[in-house]
Image (cartoon, rainbow, N blue to C red; front, side, top):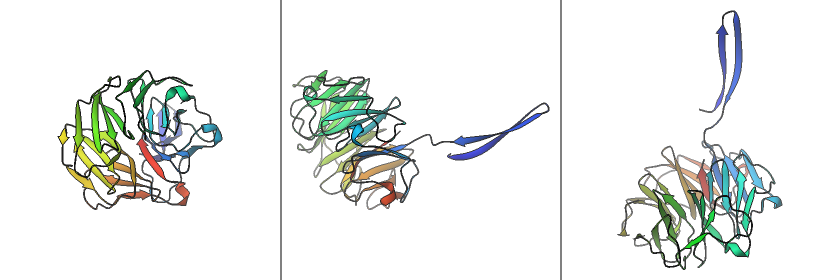
Length: 295
Protein backbone atom coordinates (compact mmCIF):
# COMPACT_ATOMS: atom_id res chain seq x y z
CA UNK A 1 0.00 0.00 0.00
CA UNK A 2 1.01 3.62 -0.47
CA UNK A 3 -0.07 6.51 1.73
CA UNK A 4 0.13 7.67 5.34
CA UNK A 5 -1.11 6.39 8.67
CA UNK A 6 -0.82 7.14 12.38
CA UNK A 7 0.54 4.61 14.88
CA UNK A 8 -0.73 4.95 18.45
CA UNK A 9 1.03 3.26 21.38
CA UNK A 10 0.52 3.24 25.15
CA UNK A 11 3.10 1.99 27.66
CA UNK A 12 1.96 2.37 31.25
CA UNK A 13 0.95 6.00 31.68
CA UNK A 14 2.78 7.09 28.52
CA UNK A 15 0.65 7.56 25.43
CA UNK A 16 1.93 8.71 22.05
CA UNK A 17 1.25 8.97 18.32
CA UNK A 18 3.62 8.70 15.36
CA UNK A 19 3.00 9.56 11.73
CA UNK A 20 4.15 6.89 9.29
CA UNK A 21 4.56 7.45 5.56
CA UNK A 22 4.19 4.23 3.59
CA UNK A 23 6.18 4.34 0.36
CA UNK A 24 5.75 2.24 -2.74
CA UNK A 25 7.81 -0.96 -2.72
CA UNK A 26 8.40 -0.63 -6.46
CA UNK A 27 9.31 2.03 -8.99
CA UNK A 28 8.66 2.07 -12.75
CA UNK A 29 11.72 3.26 -14.68
CA UNK A 30 11.50 4.44 -18.31
CA UNK A 31 14.12 5.59 -20.80
CA UNK A 32 13.32 8.55 -23.01
CA UNK A 33 15.20 7.70 -26.21
CA UNK A 34 14.15 10.94 -27.90
CA UNK A 35 14.05 13.02 -24.73
CA UNK A 36 17.45 11.82 -23.47
CA UNK A 37 16.37 11.24 -19.89
CA UNK A 38 15.49 8.57 -17.34
CA UNK A 39 12.06 8.85 -15.71
CA UNK A 40 10.86 7.27 -12.46
CA UNK A 41 7.12 6.72 -11.92
CA UNK A 42 4.98 5.23 -9.19
CA UNK A 43 4.13 1.64 -10.23
CA UNK A 44 0.41 2.48 -10.26
CA UNK A 45 0.88 5.67 -12.29
CA UNK A 46 -1.79 6.31 -14.89
CA UNK A 47 -2.94 8.89 -17.41
CA UNK A 48 -1.04 12.20 -17.37
CA UNK A 49 0.99 11.42 -14.23
CA UNK A 50 4.19 13.34 -13.62
CA UNK A 51 7.32 11.32 -12.87
CA UNK A 52 8.47 11.08 -9.28
CA UNK A 53 11.90 12.27 -10.42
CA UNK A 54 14.03 12.55 -13.54
CA UNK A 55 17.70 12.07 -14.42
CA UNK A 56 18.63 14.38 -17.29
CA UNK A 57 21.12 17.04 -18.35
CA UNK A 58 24.61 17.35 -19.80
CA UNK A 59 26.36 15.89 -16.74
CA UNK A 60 24.48 12.58 -17.06
CA UNK A 61 26.21 11.60 -20.34
CA UNK A 62 22.89 10.21 -21.55
CA UNK A 63 22.57 10.03 -25.35
CA UNK A 64 19.61 8.13 -26.81
CA UNK A 65 19.22 5.91 -23.73
CA UNK A 66 17.84 2.57 -24.84
CA UNK A 67 17.64 -0.34 -22.37
CA UNK A 68 17.61 0.06 -18.59
CA UNK A 69 17.90 -2.32 -15.64
CA UNK A 70 18.15 -1.77 -11.87
CA UNK A 71 20.31 -4.10 -9.77
CA UNK A 72 21.63 -3.73 -6.22
CA UNK A 73 20.41 -0.15 -5.73
CA UNK A 74 21.93 0.99 -9.04
CA UNK A 75 20.41 1.89 -12.41
CA UNK A 76 22.31 0.73 -15.50
CA UNK A 77 21.54 2.45 -18.81
CA UNK A 78 22.97 1.67 -22.24
CA UNK A 79 23.44 4.66 -24.55
CA UNK A 80 24.76 5.08 -28.07
CA UNK A 81 28.41 4.71 -27.02
CA UNK A 82 28.44 4.02 -23.29
CA UNK A 83 26.94 2.32 -20.27
CA UNK A 84 26.10 4.79 -17.49
CA UNK A 85 25.43 3.74 -13.89
CA UNK A 86 23.44 5.88 -11.43
CA UNK A 87 22.26 5.44 -7.82
CA UNK A 88 18.70 4.12 -7.66
CA UNK A 89 17.56 7.34 -5.91
CA UNK A 90 19.43 9.61 -8.34
CA UNK A 91 17.72 12.75 -9.61
CA UNK A 92 18.49 15.77 -11.72
CA UNK A 93 21.57 16.68 -13.73
CA UNK A 94 23.96 14.27 -12.02
CA UNK A 95 27.10 12.58 -13.30
CA UNK A 96 27.12 8.77 -13.45
CA UNK A 97 28.82 7.01 -10.56
CA UNK A 98 30.51 4.90 -13.24
CA UNK A 99 30.73 5.25 -17.02
CA UNK A 100 32.00 2.60 -19.43
CA UNK A 101 32.97 4.55 -22.53
CA UNK A 102 35.70 4.88 -25.13
CA UNK A 103 37.09 3.11 -28.18
CA UNK A 104 38.27 0.05 -26.24
CA UNK A 105 34.70 -0.76 -25.16
CA UNK A 106 33.55 -1.34 -28.78
CA UNK A 107 30.11 0.04 -27.82
CA UNK A 108 28.45 1.68 -30.83
CA UNK A 109 24.69 2.02 -31.24
CA UNK A 110 24.17 0.49 -27.78
CA UNK A 111 20.70 -1.05 -27.50
CA UNK A 112 20.58 -4.31 -25.51
CA UNK A 113 21.47 -4.57 -21.81
CA UNK A 114 21.23 -6.93 -18.88
CA UNK A 115 23.18 -7.51 -15.66
CA UNK A 116 23.82 -10.96 -14.21
CA UNK A 117 26.32 -12.46 -11.77
CA UNK A 118 28.25 -9.18 -11.46
CA UNK A 119 28.59 -8.81 -15.22
CA UNK A 120 27.07 -6.36 -17.70
CA UNK A 121 25.97 -7.78 -21.06
CA UNK A 122 25.73 -5.21 -23.87
CA UNK A 123 24.22 -5.65 -27.33
CA UNK A 124 24.27 -3.18 -30.19
CA UNK A 125 22.12 -2.29 -33.15
CA UNK A 126 24.86 -3.22 -35.59
CA UNK A 127 27.16 -6.15 -36.39
CA UNK A 128 29.47 -6.11 -33.36
CA UNK A 129 29.38 -9.17 -31.06
CA UNK A 130 27.80 -9.19 -27.61
CA UNK A 131 30.21 -7.60 -25.13
CA UNK A 132 30.54 -8.46 -21.43
CA UNK A 133 32.01 -6.12 -18.78
CA UNK A 134 32.47 -6.35 -15.01
CA UNK A 135 29.55 -4.73 -13.18
CA UNK A 136 32.00 -2.49 -11.32
CA UNK A 137 33.89 -1.54 -14.47
CA UNK A 138 34.41 2.07 -15.49
CA UNK A 139 36.29 4.09 -18.07
CA UNK A 140 37.73 3.07 -21.43
CA UNK A 141 37.93 -0.68 -20.77
CA UNK A 142 37.82 -3.59 -23.17
CA UNK A 143 35.16 -6.29 -22.70
CA UNK A 144 36.27 -9.18 -20.49
CA UNK A 145 34.81 -11.41 -23.19
CA UNK A 146 32.61 -11.31 -26.26
CA UNK A 147 29.95 -13.79 -27.32
CA UNK A 148 29.51 -14.88 -30.92
CA UNK A 149 30.41 -13.03 -34.06
CA UNK A 150 28.06 -10.77 -36.02
CA UNK A 151 25.33 -9.90 -33.55
CA UNK A 152 22.91 -8.89 -36.27
CA UNK A 153 21.31 -6.29 -34.01
CA UNK A 154 21.18 -7.68 -30.47
CA UNK A 155 18.79 -5.08 -29.13
CA UNK A 156 17.28 -7.24 -26.36
CA UNK A 157 19.02 -9.35 -23.71
CA UNK A 158 17.96 -11.33 -20.65
CA UNK A 159 19.59 -13.93 -18.41
CA UNK A 160 17.37 -16.47 -16.65
CA UNK A 161 18.46 -19.78 -15.09
CA UNK A 162 22.01 -19.30 -16.36
CA UNK A 163 20.79 -18.94 -19.93
CA UNK A 164 21.37 -15.80 -22.00
CA UNK A 165 18.48 -14.89 -24.30
CA UNK A 166 19.49 -12.59 -27.15
CA UNK A 167 17.50 -11.46 -30.15
CA UNK A 168 19.08 -11.12 -33.54
CA UNK A 169 17.05 -8.45 -35.26
CA UNK A 170 18.44 -8.99 -38.73
CA UNK A 171 18.23 -12.76 -38.27
CA UNK A 172 14.60 -12.59 -37.10
CA UNK A 173 15.24 -15.02 -34.26
CA UNK A 174 16.00 -15.41 -30.55
CA UNK A 175 19.24 -17.17 -29.67
CA UNK A 176 19.83 -18.85 -26.31
CA UNK A 177 23.41 -19.28 -25.02
CA UNK A 178 24.93 -20.45 -21.75
CA UNK A 179 25.37 -17.30 -19.66
CA UNK A 180 29.12 -17.95 -19.52
CA UNK A 181 29.51 -18.40 -23.29
CA UNK A 182 32.64 -16.83 -24.70
CA UNK A 183 34.46 -16.23 -27.93
CA UNK A 184 33.63 -15.53 -31.57
CA UNK A 185 32.73 -19.17 -32.21
CA UNK A 186 30.17 -19.41 -29.39
CA UNK A 187 27.12 -21.24 -30.69
CA UNK A 188 23.56 -20.97 -29.30
CA UNK A 189 22.29 -24.06 -27.51
CA UNK A 190 18.97 -23.38 -29.25
CA UNK A 191 17.33 -20.83 -31.52
CA UNK A 192 13.67 -19.78 -31.55
CA UNK A 193 12.09 -18.83 -34.87
CA UNK A 194 8.54 -18.14 -36.02
CA UNK A 195 6.83 -16.91 -39.16
CA UNK A 196 6.72 -13.13 -38.96
CA UNK A 197 9.03 -12.95 -35.93
CA UNK A 198 10.65 -9.49 -35.92
CA UNK A 199 12.05 -9.13 -32.38
CA UNK A 200 13.15 -5.66 -31.30
CA UNK A 201 12.85 -6.09 -27.50
CA UNK A 202 12.25 -8.89 -25.04
CA UNK A 203 11.62 -9.76 -21.40
CA UNK A 204 11.68 -13.16 -19.70
CA UNK A 205 9.40 -13.74 -16.70
CA UNK A 206 8.62 -17.11 -15.16
CA UNK A 207 8.21 -19.62 -17.95
CA UNK A 208 7.38 -17.11 -20.69
CA UNK A 209 9.28 -14.87 -23.11
CA UNK A 210 7.58 -11.58 -24.01
CA UNK A 211 8.76 -10.29 -27.38
CA UNK A 212 8.11 -6.85 -28.88
CA UNK A 213 7.49 -7.56 -32.56
CA UNK A 214 8.23 -4.45 -34.57
CA UNK A 215 6.84 -5.27 -38.02
CA UNK A 216 3.25 -5.76 -36.86
CA UNK A 217 3.25 -3.87 -33.52
CA UNK A 218 2.45 -6.92 -31.42
CA UNK A 219 3.68 -8.48 -28.19
CA UNK A 220 4.34 -12.18 -28.82
CA UNK A 221 4.56 -14.70 -25.98
CA UNK A 222 6.61 -17.92 -26.18
CA UNK A 223 7.45 -20.58 -23.60
CA UNK A 224 11.03 -20.41 -22.30
CA UNK A 225 11.41 -24.04 -23.36
CA UNK A 226 10.79 -23.15 -27.03
CA UNK A 227 13.30 -24.33 -29.61
CA UNK A 228 13.30 -24.21 -33.39
CA UNK A 229 10.21 -23.13 -35.32
CA UNK A 230 7.63 -22.28 -32.64
CA UNK A 231 4.23 -20.61 -32.73
CA UNK A 232 3.53 -17.90 -30.16
CA UNK A 233 1.13 -19.11 -27.47
CA UNK A 234 -0.65 -15.75 -27.58
CA UNK A 235 -0.16 -12.18 -28.78
CA UNK A 236 -1.35 -8.67 -27.92
CA UNK A 237 -2.03 -6.40 -30.88
CA UNK A 238 -2.26 -2.65 -31.45
CA UNK A 239 1.04 -1.34 -30.08
CA UNK A 240 2.82 1.74 -31.44
CA UNK A 241 6.46 0.68 -32.01
CA UNK A 242 6.69 -1.44 -28.86
CA UNK A 243 10.00 -1.29 -27.00
CA UNK A 244 11.24 -3.06 -23.91
CA UNK A 245 8.58 -4.62 -21.69
CA UNK A 246 8.49 -5.44 -17.99
CA UNK A 247 6.40 -7.72 -15.78
CA UNK A 248 5.39 -7.21 -12.15
CA UNK A 249 2.52 -8.55 -10.04
CA UNK A 250 0.63 -10.04 -12.97
CA UNK A 251 0.87 -6.86 -15.02
CA UNK A 252 2.70 -6.33 -18.31
CA UNK A 253 4.23 -2.88 -18.92
CA UNK A 254 5.01 -1.91 -22.54
CA UNK A 255 6.98 1.14 -23.71
CA UNK A 256 5.50 2.55 -26.92
CA UNK A 257 7.92 4.74 -28.85
CA UNK A 258 5.66 6.17 -31.53
CA UNK A 259 2.94 7.60 -29.27
CA UNK A 260 5.18 8.28 -26.23
CA UNK A 261 3.18 6.09 -23.87
CA UNK A 262 3.51 3.23 -21.43
CA UNK A 263 0.62 0.77 -21.65
CA UNK A 264 -0.21 -1.68 -18.86
CA UNK A 265 -2.04 -4.97 -19.49
CA UNK A 266 -3.05 -7.99 -17.43
CA UNK A 267 -0.33 -10.62 -17.76
CA UNK A 268 -2.67 -12.96 -19.62
CA UNK A 269 -3.99 -10.36 -22.07
CA UNK A 270 -4.45 -11.51 -25.65
CA UNK A 271 -5.63 -10.11 -28.97
CA UNK A 272 -6.87 -6.53 -29.20
CA UNK A 273 -6.81 -6.13 -25.43
CA UNK A 274 -7.60 -2.78 -23.83
CA UNK A 275 -4.89 -1.57 -21.43
CA UNK A 276 -5.94 -1.46 -17.80
CA UNK A 277 -4.21 1.92 -17.77
CA UNK A 278 -1.99 4.06 -19.98
CA UNK A 279 0.64 6.59 -18.93
CA UNK A 280 0.80 9.44 -21.45
CA UNK A 281 0.48 13.19 -21.73
CA UNK A 282 2.58 16.33 -21.37
CA UNK A 283 3.03 16.02 -17.59
CA UNK A 284 4.65 12.60 -17.98
CA UNK A 285 7.47 14.12 -20.12
CA UNK A 286 7.59 10.83 -22.02
CA UNK A 287 9.30 11.37 -25.38
CA UNK A 288 9.92 8.30 -27.48
CA UNK A 289 10.34 5.81 -24.62
CA UNK A 290 12.23 2.68 -25.67
CA UNK A 291 12.38 0.80 -22.39
CA UNK A 292 10.69 0.20 -19.07
CA UNK A 293 11.85 -1.69 -16.01
CA UNK A 294 10.18 -2.40 -12.68
CA UNK A 295 12.36 -2.17 -9.58
